[in-house]
Image (cartoon, rainbow, N blue to C red; front, side, top):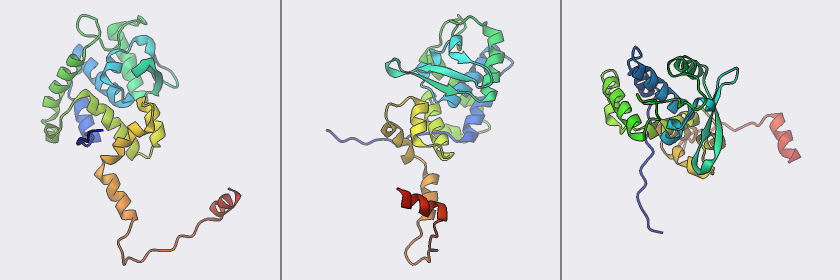
Length: 217
């Protein structure tokens, strides 16, 4: 197969995500929708096509709030929602109605938003957010960057890569593995665990429980 250069996955910091959340004017209908849109993109790590396809019937609000997402190949997955996201959705339903077939993120005509709609609204948010978070202008901020950011932040939090693969709807963890190549801080922490030659290394003393486990294998 022909070789090609593969770009490093881009992602946003938590502060940059927060700046984008705070950008929409929630005194307006559009602002309320956009803030919830950005929050749901980050919470779920969903593709933009999956987000704009969501209907009210896909949202379950309760003690364990979650969303049903129809992914590639008509494969459905369930992603949990933070309490804050669930509360935002609950409040938003008062503005758009509760018909099960209603799109969760409609345009002004009540129809589903398009990819270009989402991109345009995100670029407006970037312009506002950049006033307080100028480093955003150094990124190519797109709806898909939210997905990358979700994956990276889950990985940074110690979530197993197999769980992240399920979260994102990847058929194989190998697809998710690209995120492990992107975060320099994670590599620096790994390097700190590997001391340079000549450095005294304390001998590891395994606990009795681990020794017993190994003996029983």
